[in-house]
Length: 164
Image (cartoon, rainbow, N blue to C red; front, side, top):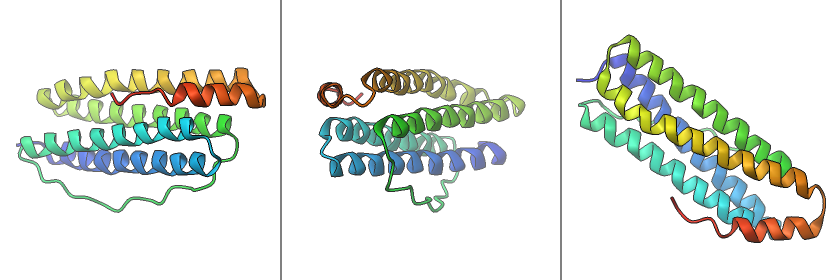
């Protein structure tokens, strides 16, 4: 049986992962409204990935005999401004998620919950990849600045992202 504090933390993280999915889907819709389907596709795939993360936590909690309690999800913004600002928000959000997962790891360590520590290793490695991916897009957008041709090329490049 999983410790109740760890169970609560994982339930909170399930909500956080669903929010991440919802946020990226909203960003995707925004990009579609601006006719940048490559940016939209990248963000939609990111949304799907976050949904997968929520389900991974969901299944883990059930496997450990815990109870999943789904809480309401905050509505994300629907306006994001320039693509650079939006992807800086993506990067900052991923850094926040990294902190959340690290906090669960610290809690599980304090409870001597070895199984949760092992499960969280996957998420810790995943967050390194998530931050790197977002940071690459931010840096490319900085190089593109306000050059429409560069933005179109980057949009085409981002459309090639495959589901992971």
